Length: 341
Image (cartoon, rainbow, N blue to C red; front, top):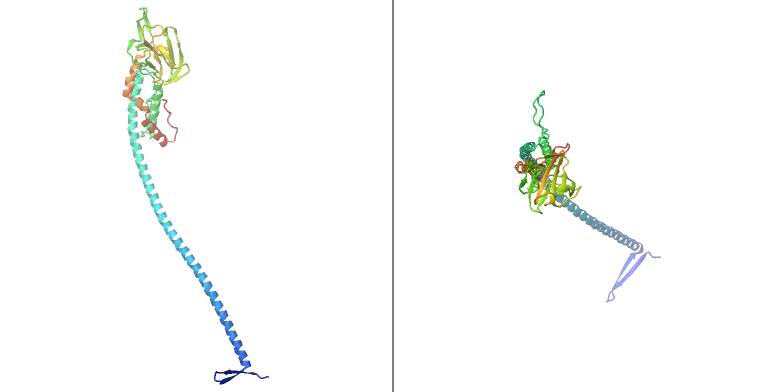
């Protein structure tokens, strides 16, 4: 069998050319061509796959870059916010420090002024109460005989001790009958007198004060109503126990506005002026007893004018209460006793 392959190519004019090819060489060429095509195909596939992977990796790289950029921006923003917050905190701390210093200065000025005022008023109140025979224990005074020792500066809680003293005065004053139960003029004084009904010499255990029927009668101290009834010649009668040995009595009243067992405070209306019982006209019989013995109400009634000068009411003002709070905050010991209103 021939190993050659004859290929005849003819043209339009009948001329032809004859090509003789070796089948072995042709076969080798075809195989070589197929190998080349296969190699090209594999190379193209690998190149395409590499390009695809590169594109994917590039996309991921871009995404990571964007994320890093975003995180960097957030970090920068956080640093800026932290710096701003730090500045604000520092500003607030500085402001608080200034306010604390200002508060301490104001507090000290308030205490210095108030303590001086309280000292003056307490001294005046003490003198007034002593003048009417009310015993107020002065814890400042002591027997200096047979004593000694080195001199020491006053204690820092002197203001607190002064407020305690003022509270003691207030507690005492609130239950001592001071002032007038009605504004009317005194028509019959305390002591020996001629009886207004029978003209005989007798003893008057209180004072009579003129008034119109229906005028208000007020309590002159804090206390508890012990009696409120019609009491023979006293007519309509009220008796108030102030819990410290003092009792006040009100007679010839027109109407009761309290009853037995009621707690009353100074200035509270307890009834009205009348003409009941053994009476020659509309008036109030007002009586003060100490340990069951009648005492002259006059000095207690006129003391009310001195009370204003002494500033007793101001001892329990908002300003004084504020001072108490400041002192209690300053001193974590037992707080000062609360004054009764």
